[in-house]
Amino acid sequence: MNKAHPKLEVPSRSDRSFYGEGIPRIRPEELAGKLIVVEGADGSGRSTQIELLVQWLEISGHATVQVGLKRSTLVSEELARAQNGNILSHTTLSLFYATDFADQLENVILPSLKAGFIVLADRYIYTLMARDMVRGMDAAWLRNLYGIALKPDAVFYLAIEPAELLQRVLAKAATLDYWESGMDLGLSRDLYDSFIEYQTLMRLAFRKLQKSYGFTVVDGHRAVDEVNRELKQNIETVLTGQ
Image 1: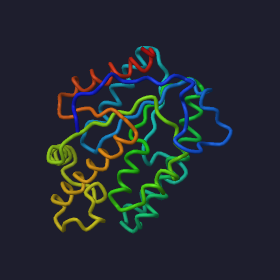
Image 2: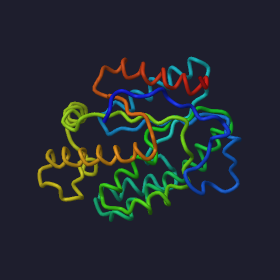
Image 3: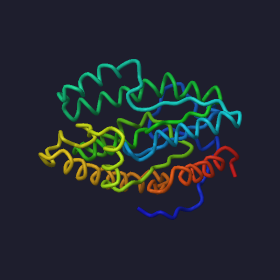
Image 4: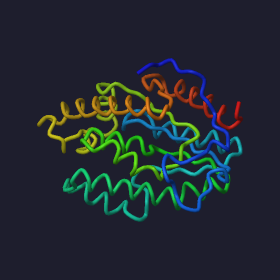
């Protein structure tokens, strides 16, 4: 992925829209807040950057709300239990995550935006779509499934080479996650080899999504403060509209 990026284009309030049919009775132009998405694999520094951004925004006087995967009170516990048992089919897993996302969209993201909050999403539909693409799900079906999603004001994907991700994850957790290693795909019997191959496939999927959805790719190999500085500069552009 290219590491040099053009100036971030800031959508106006009138440009705000859903990717598809959206949520009934919601008028996007009435959503006064901003939706900022940070994407990236586990180990990319995504959660650290969001924590730093929340601190910066709140010190600057902006009210913030955080959302992320598996945070819906509707299905998060059931999804976690099913994943722990490694018993989900690819379609069932996809629908579980889509339900989790839809619940947060309707009950957290949209109301917060309407109230003027800045919503920081620790991953959004792009991770869900990339995972499903790697698992052979139909692209048109996925676009329709996530047509309810609101287009964010900015999306940043922290790109990290799989080998570096492996070292970071092991340094932090000393183990690898079954699903984040793609073990359900039968890529390799070796957990470490499967992780590398799966994360390589995920990078390719994100590259395809980037061409379709135009989000900003950020070099995540750099120091935390360097990455944070770039994110702040881009978000400042979003907030000021300049």
